[in-house]
Image: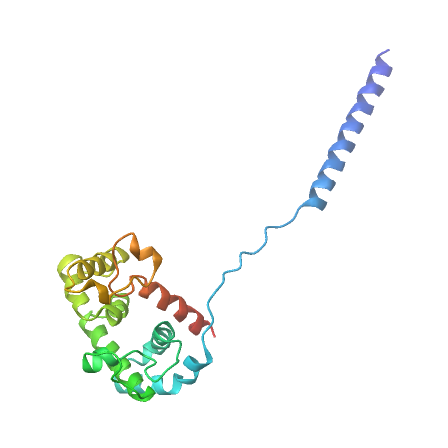
Amino acid sequence: MKKRTKVALKQSILVTVFLISIFVIISYLSYEPPSKVEVDYPSISREVLDYQPLVEKYAREYSVSNYVDVLLAMMMQESGGRGNDPMQSSESYCGAVGCIDDPELSIKQGVYYFSQTLDAANGDLELAIQSYNFGKGFIDYVLEHSQSYSQDIAIDFSKHMYENAPDQSIYSCLREEAKQYNACYGDIYYVKSVMTYKEVISAN
């Protein structure tokens, strides 16, 4: 009787081990490793890349050679490299839109103005980039309120400028997300967009 019990127990153990082995094999064969998350990076236009030698030329002239990728990214955000004012430099040059009609002058002025914002921002790159879009008045606002750039201070400044504008009709929210903050002066996500383009340019 004891012998039969031992045999039955042994058979039961063997069956259990066999079933566990089958389960492990099936689990292994059916396992699929997690797929890689593909990040959809924006592309850089050929027009922007073609202007790189000019950007490098004026970056050397104004002592910002370390920021060529940033300047190209800003051009991509401003115009995609299209038109006769690819850096959208007219307002910083003459105080009005459309006074520059020469791409090289646009780039020269754009690089110069960026060098000025970087210097005024005491090397705070994000503050300098956003000030290229908002104007250098943003630097004074930041130094008075928070001492450094942040997304929140960019939203606050845009909202402040929009709400205190003599004629709000000349502004339109460039992004849907800005409407909820009533922040329709400039582009509150300018830094984020520029740095995304810069990452692509630096990787190539």
